[in-house]
Amino acid sequence: MNMPHPEFDTSGGLPFACIAVPICLPTLYLWVVDELALGRGTWAIESGTKLGWCLWGSLELEEAVFFLTTNALIVFGLVAFDRNMAVLDTFPEMFPAAPEHMSFNSLMKVILIDPANYDMNRVRGIREAVNTLRKKSRSFYLASSVFPGRLRIDLVLLYSFCRVADDLVDESSTEAEARSWIRKLSGYTDRAYGATGEKSRSPADLASYAEKNFPIRVRSALTLLPSKHLPSGPLYKLLKGFEMDMAFTNGVFPIGNEADLQIYASRVASTVGELCLWLVFYHSSIKLPEDEKSRLRQAAITMGYALQYVNIARDIQVDAEMGRVYLPTDWLREEGLTPRDILDNPKQAKVETLRQKLLGLAFEEYQKSRPIMDLLPDEIRGPLIVAVESYMEIGRVLREKSSVPSKTKRGRATVPRSRRIWVAWKNLSTS
Image 1 (tube, rainbow, N blue to C red):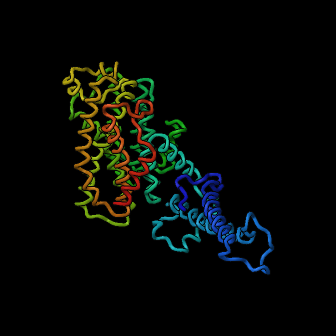
Image 2 (cartoon, helix red, strand yellow):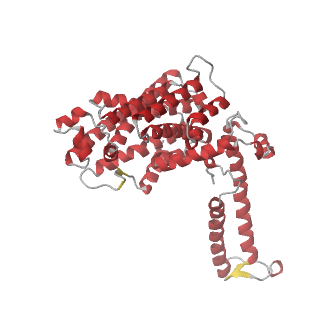
Image 3 (tube, rainbow, N blue to C red):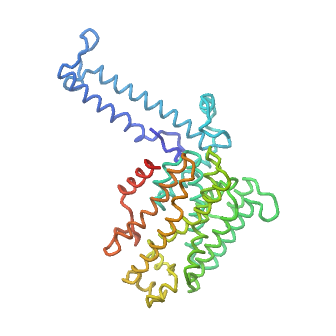
């Protein structure tokens, strides 16, 4: 059993279902098997060593209690171990050594530390980040479950930062408000990295800036960004991508051609892929040569194009409702369309033709970068491939449904849960 420690329970209570199911199901199975065996005379309990009470049929009370107690002891032992590992993963400041190098003494140290010393703001922030990921990206939420502990937490925190930053800009009611959020996000990044010529600020200073400038619902996403393991360049580039989005508020369509499309994808998606790799390099116990790191970083940039193109292909209708068209204007012109035509009718047949063209471009970029992922360390390769393949599966669904209505959620194609699980299982077993 592996408890989902990025959702460490702030109340101190145990997750009931995660405890009860592993105890009850094996116990019930053993009860049934034992009842059948006793009923058939396969074995028997000596009369002098039993009370003579049966739970049902031939199942002796002693047998039933033995199986229940044994399973409970095993499960609670695993819970205790998982709880200690969760603490080690959640509080790297308290336990600097990597969890895979932890000794039995380290686990005992966790037991002896008073939980009152835990940074519960961090725990709550991680929980909020997990909930954000669950709500906003089912594909990446599933993929996140197969990453090792500390890397998983940092990746979820990175996603949460990027997501709330994007939402602040997208949900602005005016251009002035959106620009204000971008300035504040840039100001926070300046302070986190000392980009203003000063030293980077302390966590307390960053928390104070976030409290003064951002709503409470997004503060933890900012303050928990693992910036000390990340370069600042991709974050500033991400903000440039948000600025491209703002052009739509003035009735301007900034994606004029395929080059503009690639620039946009590099800013809003390739940056995130590159940041993910920095976390992978930091947390991996295997240190790669610089030439392999360079190839992997370039592959992350290229894969970012692919994932963003799939995202755009999926969200044509949703984006049109927001007054946005990310399909290149010169592509539209070739089909006798204008951006306004897409806004007026994003479901027309010609749009499907353009969607498939964009998906073709996405899979071209995917094919360029996917083989290079084999350079990743074994411990990370499988989970990262699952993350990529889970999202590319959306593109495959869109290709399969090119001539028939697809299952959608608010105009977005979705991948059935069983298919997402199969994709994860297949790629983990072959990576």
